[in-house]
Amino acid sequence: MSTVSKTTNEEVASVVEKPHDTRASFNPNIIAFACHYCAFAAADLAGVMRLTYPTGVKVIRIPCTGKLDHSYVLRAFEQGVDGVFVAGCLVGQCHFLEGNVNAGKRVGHLKKLLESVRIDPARLEMYNLSGSQGPRWAEICIEFTERIRMLGPSPIRIAKEEKNRGKRCDNL
Ligand code: FES
Image (cartoon, rainbow, N blue to C red; front, side, top):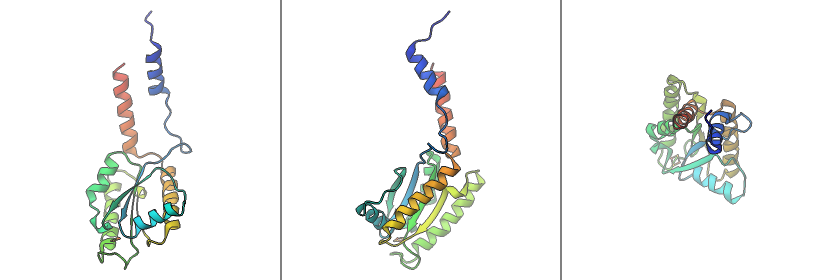
């Protein structure tokens, strides 16, 4: 009878017995594309005010939401993030005139694109806020994280995790 080493047993356990994140324990990975002027200032203010918001939100600063390219968002989902939000200045207050309005249209288009590949469009959202709205920033992060938590892990993330598990099993 062949014996299985303790290390291999542990590996198998980590591969096979590791349950999928349950809704309660699932900590969504979220990317926030924040414009330098208002949204990033609001995020900064939230930090200065020592407001707490979920740690899964990673902020990427862009000069203006008008600079947001479709590929930034699609690449983020392709990498397995669970949700993406875009945060820019209030309508009428974009430092590049209509960058935020154009970003809103782009987000609308991207939502349709996501839906066509069976990714829930609710995983993407656009928000507008001013630089003085630190508490609103924290609120957005909490609300959006909760929304994604309810949706569960992204199907791409699940597929990637399953693929990695398969690879680990092949290596046994
Ligand atoms: S500068 Fe903030 S959205 Fe354009």
